[in-house]
Length: 143
Image (cartoon, rainbow, N blue to C red; front, side):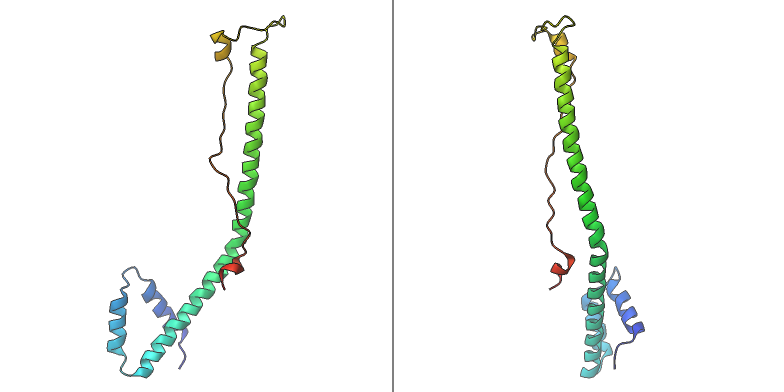
């Protein structure tokens, strides 16, 4: 006798309950099931639920894999833009520093002059780590 959808639904709710205790569940089955045939039916129900759960998990992985890859590409793109912005800011800081060291007449201003040093803002961007994503497809996780 195959498990009905209602049986599997009830079993799913029971196993997913927040107060689920495996020992209590096994005791209930042992008390309720008289013969070996009923125990085999319960085992078949649990196996069917396991297969259903596995299929749902696999479906969710495939659905979310594309979104994961798009997000990874976007992060990589943003990281590249941040690096470029950091480089541009460094170049602009160097230009401002060189301009502040030169007077209108073209003479160099004394580098020890504290006022000239304080006029140049310092901007520093650092990347603590780089994200690297492997090229593993979702099918590789289900062997």
